[in-house]
Image 1 (cartoon, one colour):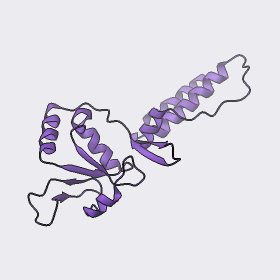
Image 2: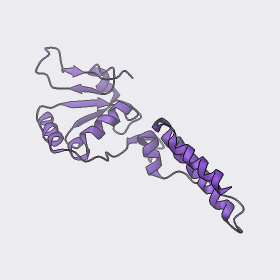
Image 3: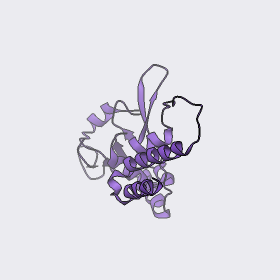
Length: 173
C-alpha cells in the first residue's frame, strides 16, 4: 500500500509544468489521505471547508477580489514578487521622466508578466492605468479616450505623433 502511494506521488511530479497547480492540489490530497490513513483514531467527524489563503488566490488568479465598504467587488493585482535589476530601475526612471504610461487590466496575464519582468523596485516607477472598471482605481473612460484596444499598451509621450500619444499595443483583450 505504501509502495503504491509512492508510485502515485512520483507520477504527479513527472507530468508537464502546465498542470503544476492541479498536480500540487492532487499531491496534497493524496498525502492527506495517506496521513489520515495512518492515524490510529480521530475525534474529528467532519472537515472544515475554509477559504484558501490569499497567497493561493494570488498565485492562481494573479489578483485579489476584495469587497469594499459599498459592497462593490474590486480586483487588486498581486504584488510584484521579483526584485528589479539595476538596468530595469534605470530604464524605469528614464521612462518615468518621459511621461511613459502602461495601460493594462488586472486580469491580463501579459500585464502581470510585464510587471514581474520589471521587478518590484522598477515597477514602482512605472506609470500605470487600470483599464478595467472592476480593477482597483479603474479608469476605463481614459483608456477609451486614448484608444487603448489591447493589453498591455504603452504610451511613450506625444513626441512622435501629431494627433496624440505614441501608443504601442500588446495583446488584444
